Image (tube, rainbow, N blue to C red; front, top):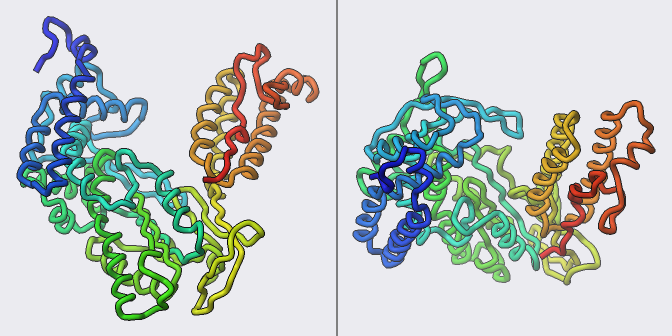
Length: 480
């Protein structure tokens, strides 16, 4: 158990060979992946048992969970939000996949539509067990997952999903069925999920205990209606497993419509696309009647899994026209996709209610308006909160946020929006500087806070030119 002797627990934790541990776990996970590709279930189960029992895997699980929760003030039933090195060593000895779970602490998470969703926060022991089990199950399913599933998978991101949608919409306008399944686990059917996992009985028992775990309120009352004992570690993985097969099912529905000759021969099954990111997905197809039939079948398929689609979170839209009083285009993962008429683009045949017409249009992808407003509001709150702090601290705080946000939307049609963000940020910073020096004139404030730097004017920078604020417009790239 102890890899370094004659040391305190704190020194033992700091001296652990993390690179060696990662190599060991990586080798076993690669063997699990290869066995899953060969459909060798016996080897997969054996290697998963070995991985879960390894002490290096437990060390990595505890370290990862402690790293995720560090700095977050989250209430738990055990009252622990961060582990010391000594507590980490003790937790490694304690964790074991035994099919048991602890009570949850119920918290409320606000959503953009002003609805508070109740979440169950597991204890540190359960979080470590979930990450340990995830390391064993994830390689098996990475060999099975569908190609257009991008959410919470290693080596995949939102940008991959955006690129897949752009490739589909670049040459043809289509109808889109946009779905966001809000409540994932409170209503999910346990038996279909566990049967689809088809894993070791001990693993099945452990996951079933997390799904059925009860919530405990601050006053001691219990409830099992608000959600399961699932953390960020394993809940996205189980969502991917539950929704696995959606792309194949949609393909079968389209093939059935094509076989029955329910729509024109000019539209093949290959024109359809399903892009899924965890519990959000879109179905794109150029023919409306076929898409409506597919939507009915998809709703039935989701109902068997325990998912219900609300009308406010699902709609059929068109990327070029208004359809059923819905706006043109759709929003997915913070990106707004639509087609715009103009000189740019090629003449393309688009079908709308059995009528073909030649239109000249091009694909437009922009940051979502709501996300832009939310980001500007977040920047404004940071500036207000740090009004009494030095200028250098404000620049450091804003640079990290601007860097992440502009990187996410770098490869979109962002010229207008990024310049708009620069303008709003300038006026907000000017007000910040004027509030710091109420007795000074605006001319003096501009002279001491804004300078010409690297070819740009009105740059918010310190007088010694050592720290400058990033500009949104420096991340304007050509749309790819």
